[in-house]
Length: 161
Image (tube, rainbow, N blue to C red):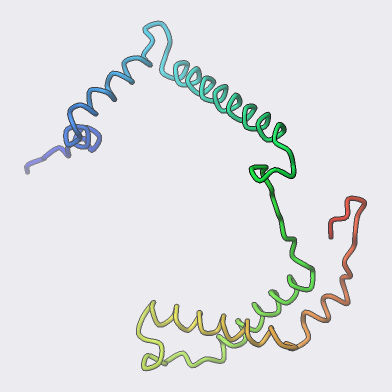
C-alpha cells in the first residue's frame, strides 16, 4: 500500500503565484510578526488598527456630509420609499395564490416545463407570475380582509407601524 501525501493547497497556490507578489505577501506577513507577542495578540493589534482607520474615514465622511449644504447638487440625499400596508398584504395574497396555483399545475408536465430541476424551477416561476397577476386585480380578498383586520397604526414619529 502506497500512501501519497496531498500537497499543501496554500503552498501550491503560493508557488503558482507571481514571484514578486509572493515576496510582497511574505514581507507583509514578516512585518506583522512580533517576537515577543503571539499570533492572537498580533492579530488583535492589527484589527484595532483597522477599526481606528475605519472610524477615522467615517468621521471624515460625516464631517464632509455635514459641511455640504442640503440644496447643493453634491449633497447626499437618501430617499426611502416605505411600503404601504396594503402593498404588503397584496404581496402576501400573491404568495398564497402562488402556492394554490403551483399545487394545481400538473406534476408530470415534462413536455411543457422540461425535465428535472429546470422543469421544477419553470413551474415555480410560472406559478409565481400567475399568483402576482391574480393578486394585482381584485384578488380573492385576502389582502382586503387583512387590511380591514389590521388598520395602519401611526406612532409619534409618523412611521407606519
